[in-house]
Image 1 (cartoon, rainbow, N blue to C red):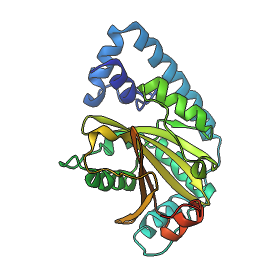
Image 2 (tube, rainbow, N blue to C red; image 1 turned 180 degrees about the vertical axis):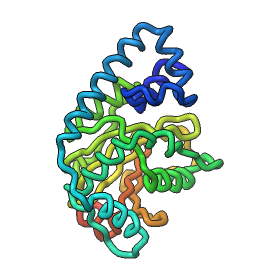
Image 3 (spheres, helix red, strand yellow; image 1 turned 90 degrees about the horizontal axis):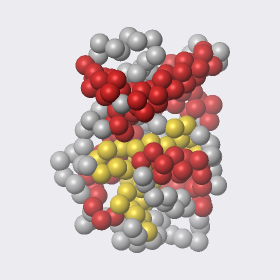
Image 4 (cartoon, one colour; image 1 turned 45 degrees about the horizontal axis):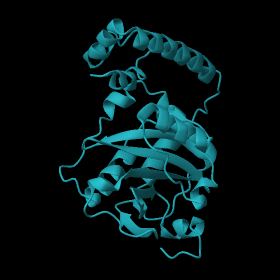
Length: 252
């Protein structure tokens, strides 16, 4: 385990110390004791977690929030357009971030084939679980800077028709040894997910600059390429929703 791997895991370590005996954290904690730089980062991270926890505890939580979120997840199976609504969507994301076991319970298992078709299926499965965003912000430039500084990923082009909407946060998904960047946006009450990945890893990826529509299970997707990156947009909104936010001058 290297320093970056330890940081990703320890970001989920609860400051109360109740995870100290959990074997999932043992290697990362041992590395922290040997690495002064990591030790300073971990102390700062724990202080931040305590401060955020205190602030979040001050936010009133509606009594029926859990029921609304669960109903929304069930509603994903219904063949109609779903609009989550900004307040409920943000509340759901906060609830996910506050779930201590979210990281451990949602270990992502990639499908065996390394094709682009398999990646679209896997990203849909990932989003259908309780995924965790590394950084929450409505500052898109700040999210790009975070991915660049923390993961060494080059800044990638976010299409204007998506960048004009508020961002929610970003994260990284490990998929067959490569890092897939994810930035989430709130678009007309729907959460829209933008994935970016190196095109060199795929022989069957998109070959056009014009996004192409495809329904992958309950997820509506757009895919396109802009060398050296492949891009994938996924949302629970249907094709009509995507057409409503996509530039009318470019066909799907």
